[in-house]
Length: 199
Image 1 (cartoon, rainbow, N blue to C red):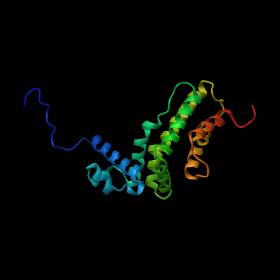
Image 2: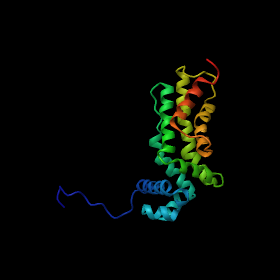
Image 3: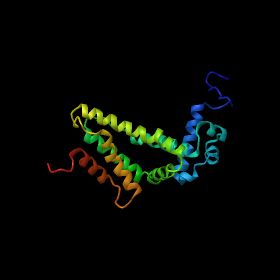
Image 4: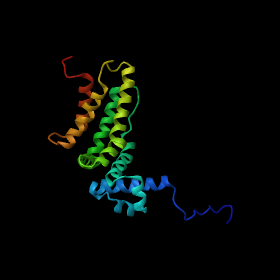
């Protein structure tokens, strides 16, 4: 082998982090392409070139794997901006969230995960651990900073603000009596920050 020839990679086992990332990508592809019922250990293992034993070692159920795969896929698209302007940051984040659910094709996926989570405790726990609680924590951190800057009242209930904003989007996703749009997201921010009383 000359000094210009790159070393050949051995045929040994792939690093665990690489295997895990491949499994999550394969699960996300199945989830987004065919829905949660497509995410089985058999299909994910085949798509990822991994073994079912490995999947069983890392995830207690296929539902738990699906929840983590969804979070891993969506997290970069739901980053929370921090410009120091609460209204602008909320509008940016809420519009991105609505786009993901509507134009990004994630709406049916998240609705399916929420539905199955009602009867699958392992998926429910994974959904909370990998998706809903981290998202809530990011929002609460943003609100705490805004409160410290004087953009929110000292006595405002920050958890209630989270429920008002994102809860309303989930409601329109799951009970589609009214459309879920970016204009709706902006109106939610205005209503939450300004209140419904006459100015």
